[in-house]
Picture 1 (cartoon, rainbow over the protein chains, first blue to last red):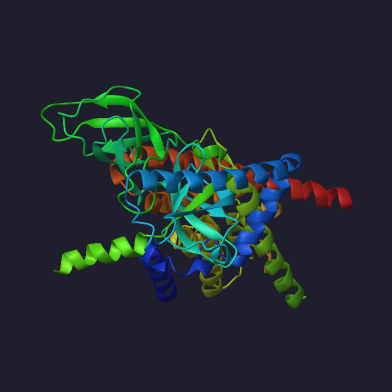
Picture 2 (picture 1 turned 30 degrees about the vertical axis):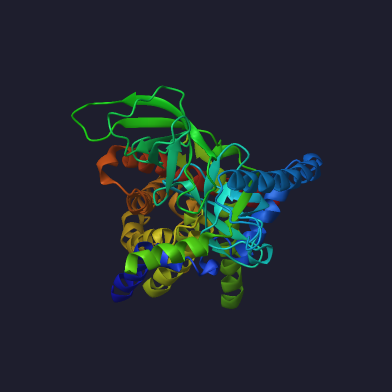
Length: 266
Length: 174
C-alpha cells in the first residue's frame, strides 16, 4: 500500500514537472535507444527507392531557405552594416522525421538530427508548407520536438495582408484532436477578416523567422459583446505526412534575449 | 526452472514494449480507439506474483513506454494503478477450486469469457486514469470517455486475439 502511494506520487510528480526535464534527453524519445529504434522502423517503412532523392532535395531546399531568410532579413534592414555584421541570422538544418504523432492531445516528433548537427533546445522546426514545432530536448544524434499540436505551444503570428499581430494555438479539446485546424487568438472585433486570409509567423519570439505560413482562416465568429473574435484556421502543414523538416537556428536569439531582459531590469 | 522463468519474463517485457512503440503506437481505429497491447504483460504475470513486484514491474513498464511516447509519468501512474488492483480483480474471476500455484491468469486457465472480463476491467482502469491525466481540460469529459471506451474495447480485443493466436501456435506444434 505504501509502495503504491509512493510510486503514484513519483509518477504524478513526473507528470506535473514534465517541462523541467527538457534538458534530460534520456527521458524522452530522443534518447539513444528510442531514437535508434524509431530510426530503424522508419527506415523499414520508408519506400527506399525514394529515400535518396528526397534527401538530396531536402539538402537543396535547406540551402535555399537559408538564403531566403537571410535575404528577407537584409531587406528589412535588421542586419547591421557589413563592418560588424555578425553574419547570417538564420541557420537551417534539414532533418528526417523518425517518429511523429498527431492524435494525442500533446504530440511530439523525433528527428534524426541532434547536438552533433548543431541542434539545441528551443529552436524552431518548419516544413516545406509551414510551421511544425519547437525543439524540446536533444541527444547526440536525435532530438525530440514539441509538435505545434501540443497544448504548451502557442505561436506569435500575424495576418499576412496587414501584419496585425495575433497568436495561433492548437486547441485539442475544442477540436477533438483534429490536426488540421487551430485557433487564432487575441484578435479584437474591429479587425476585419475574410475567410481564406493567410496567417504567417511574426518572427517576434525568435523561434521562427518572419513570414512562415501557419494557415488560412476557416471560420470567423465575431460577436461584438466579446473581447476577441473566435477564429479557426486550416493549418498549412499536414502533420500526418511529415517526412522531412527543417530546424531553424536564430543566431541573434541570445543577443535579443539579453537585450530584452536588460530592458526589464532597468 | 525459476531462473529460466525470470529470463523468459524479461524477454517478454521487452517484446511487448517493442511491439507497442514500433507497431501498436501507430494504430488508431477511427481516430478514437487506441491500442495499448503492452498491458497484457502485467495481466499475464503469474497469479502468485507478490504485490511489491507487481507494483515495481508496473512502474518500470509504464515508465519505459512513457519515454517512447514522450508522456513522462502518465503511463507509469496508470500501470501502477492497474498493478495495485490486479489481485482483487483476479479474485473476482478465479475459477472454482482456485488457481494452481504458479499458473497465469490466461485464457487456458480462465476460459475465454472470464479472461475477456478480466481484460476489460483491468484495461478500463488503466485507460480511465491515463486518458483523464492526458486530457488537459475536463470540460470535454464526454470526448475523453469516448476515447476511454473505444480504446478499452480495442486494447482488450487485441490482447485476447494475441492470446488466441499464441494458443493456436502452441497447439499446432504439439
